[in-house]
Length: 553
Ligand code: GLC
Image 1 (cartoon, rainbow, N blue to C red):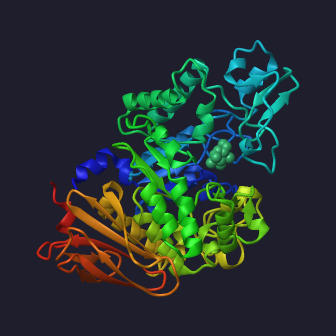
Image 2: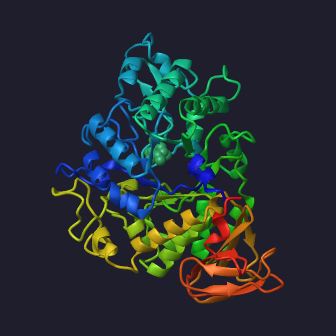
Image 3: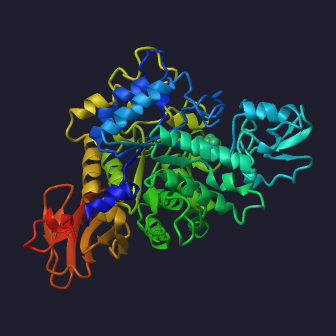
């Protein structure tokens, strides 16, 4: 594959690392992470090999939804630093070759945002129409309530102005009215502001909610997304929108801009993620294989973002009730591990009982899946959750840098996990010195993933492995092939694959030392250890595997 393509369309095989400035590293000893602390850790992130940082909201906020409730879109939460600190961070990240994207949370504002304070002050306010009001809203449909533990309606009566306002999430997050052209202009201004300061794009929060209120004056709600993307492309051709769109595949293609690819550049593969968890719960490849077969190919230049965990609950909302129960039983049987009746508030290692072989296999699977991998800070060292924290906060624990914690010289504002996942047992410093650690495994996976752009760019095929627990898939691009096999169960497995077009070629192991020969009929026999995982590059016997892909064609 021509590597020049991978720098122009950088997002197609990026490695995205999501972090919250507040929980990453405290630079001023007040127990709260900040931009100065984060900036000091840039070399750690660059050394890990990630290529793009996704910053969770870092804007001024009353913090009633961990920063997803914003009171000013144009500055930095004073607890996390200043705009000056932000610019210093951006400059340092750029120097180390790291791109940065940030959360764009414009479905709603905080109810303490000056726009909303003004809007509710009078029905004649110039900001009144920036929000969605109703005298008599439609009765609620329970499926619309996102946080059923805290809310029972998506409408809230405002005593001050005598009307109801719409809030898709918490009642303290009134929805913005993107049907109003002034609001759409303001959103573009927000994008433009942060792009001027160096952001390469945005992770767009809650996209289906964001576009649902679009006014009939636009031909389709999707026109709004296309307008935003066009605005960004005019300002910076390589900027991206990564959308949080948890809808079935059939509906999702529209968000890429059906056929045209002119809306969201990337969408999270929520369906694939949920099927992967079902597959791991059953130790059976089929649920994930099925998702990979059904997943639409994104339009040219667009990409899937693949992930196993994120900052929210591990949502299993798109599984059937029986399937969800299987995952709950396997990975979160206690009620306190579950949330909203649809998800788990745990990080991955706890769900696997700390079984390092299984954890390593799961991340090998993630990095081999066709798409751009997104990891949540701390996954690279196998951090656990703190179930004593409220709700989704269980997984948003401070980063564990050393045996003592290392996040802050002061008492961290948030508690760290205790026991098997405490900093004494799980931390960056120890894992840096241990060649078999999860951290070193992540570095290897990221290095190989970057060396195999076929995984992200290629056409993928799920192969018949003949073994229910083994997922085998190949990715082909420009005449080069990478093959990945994963054993989801805890007993050894042997599989026989038929690799069309690869007869007589050599398969070189990419994660360990070894090679296999493909027979004249394309057949190859592959042994796998319990929870074993292997990646291979195919090459003609006379071509060194290192040269099989990098030839400019
Ligand atoms: C998204 C975020 C979540 C937040 C919600 C409301 O779903 O991922 O953390 O609470 O939007 O902004």
